[in-house]
Amino acid sequence: MSPAAGPGVPTERSAPTGRALPTYVWEPTTDFLAARYGLPRESIIRFDVNTSPLPPDLRDVLAGSFDPSLCEYPPSDYAALVAAAAESYGVGADEILPTAGADEALDLTARAFLREGSVAVAAVPTYAMYRIVSEQRGASFVAVPRTSREAGFGLDIPAMARAARGAQLVWLCEPNNPTGMVEPPERIAELLGLLASQATQDGREAPAVAIDEAYAEFVGRSVLPLRARYSRLVVIRTLSKAHALAGARVGFAVARPETLGPILSYRAPASVSTVSAALATAALRRPELAAANVARIAGQRARLTAELSAIGWRPYPSQVNFILFRFSSPQVAAATAEALLRQGLVPRTFSPNHPLADCLRLTVRSAQENDRLIEAAKGIPA
Image 1 (cartoon, rainbow, N blue to C red):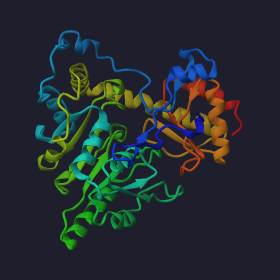
Image 2 (tube, one colour; image 1 turned 180 degrees about the vertical axis):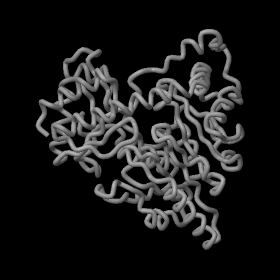
Image 3 (cartoon, helix red, strand yellow; image 1 turned 90 degrees about the vertical axis):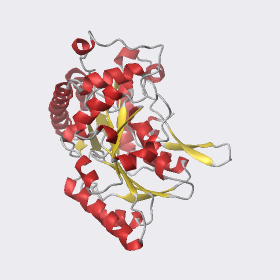
């Protein structure tokens, strides 16, 4: 496989009906990369997956209470986890649905609001799963280009509103992955207001709007208050990023009860394991751990940006746990990726036909890991 192909590229497989379904191409494993490049496994550093370099230290929290009954299913109401999430996000317990990571929340949302012949809308470039889960439901996926690079990859709100007229579901990622762009809350509110106004004019139900807030903790704000004004708003949260629990696979769909109901009806029983639920509950009850992780990453992000800028790499502004760098051409980006891979440093690449083909996305990692990246970059022509 070519590293330039990158993960997150939709491919197709045959469904039982013969219709091609898009699927997600996952990142190559660490073992695969070590074997391919002839490197020790422990020398591989993942700058491509937007995970935290360090796990949360929950030993003191779990030592006296972590005794999950692994021979039994978790409680169907996940009461302790729901209570911790509701308190953390400032919402009602009846507005929280625990899921197996944010990706299950995305899939359930698509199942709840899309049918064969439906229309889903998203601002691109963005997370590839929105298209995949939409098309797997038989929906048409309308990709609305974001504003120019120079304008910061912002939302083209008039274009989004036009495309969403008559649509059943709108996907947004805030902050956006992979650009790192942060949309001002008032612009999100403006878009929701336009969608509601159009629906009233057309005598239609307003589309559901799913906003993926995987990186919300890094910017210290949320669109959750907007659900009071736009009843069909679904906010997706995760413990994979700031809380550093990607391996536990815990996320949430958060919405008003009447909007959450259809999503809940599609969730498989006990999709979040007992162990994961206990870890997530403990993490949510220790918000200072996530806050410290965010602060640590912010410091390293500033350092990594400055050091790589000094050698000619061109970063886009970022407030999250990754940085998008632009190179002079897709060929230079691909050559840089290959040079990094040969040293065991794994960047996030983009396929040749992707609008960010001339870019690499790099996760902010520990000081020592970032040191390796900086030293390697100094020997690669920019």
